[in-house]
Image 1 (cartoon, rainbow, N blue to C red):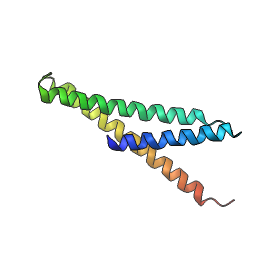
Image 2 (image 1 turned 90 degrees about the vertical axis):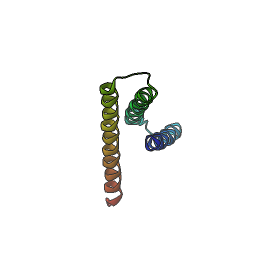
Image 3 (image 1 turned 30 degrees about the vertical axis):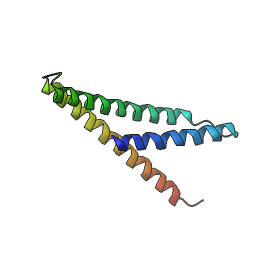
Length: 101
């Protein structure tokens, strides 16, 4: 979960930089940034729900192992998806850096 928080913090700082750029007269880039922040927030919420389901199972508040396992698997898949998106973004950034003007 710490990795998702780190990704969220980095996107928030990117959003602040984009807002500063827009205030300085640059073009707004909030569409992509908002979509990315929402996706990261959704993945974080899924991770938190999985943690709560695990805690409820361990403390005996629920006996539904199936629902807990589904929540954990959903959290794993959402995290893997976010990591693949991050990898694609890093790859695209590196490709842009290699371009000659």
